[in-house]
Length: 87
Image (cartoon, rainbow, N blue to C red; front, top):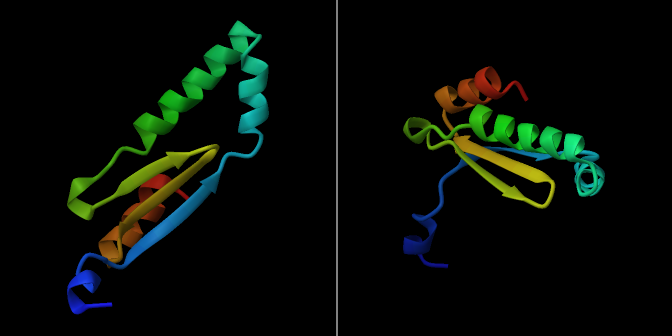
């Protein structure tokens, strides 16, 4: 591995959130409009609560029923991860 490729990576704090039971909730929502609205509200809440922070290079990624959060590995980044997202 060259020194140039190492420059592309930065150390970050990472949190992995597994939304237990979410798959089942989605299955139920397929046939129940009330449950569908609940799932929609949950997704909106996650989107609005876990907003990105460019100053601290906060990122969120979704896949399946999981959310991955990451932020710069600095004292400010760690504080922001715990303060704002209460992991």
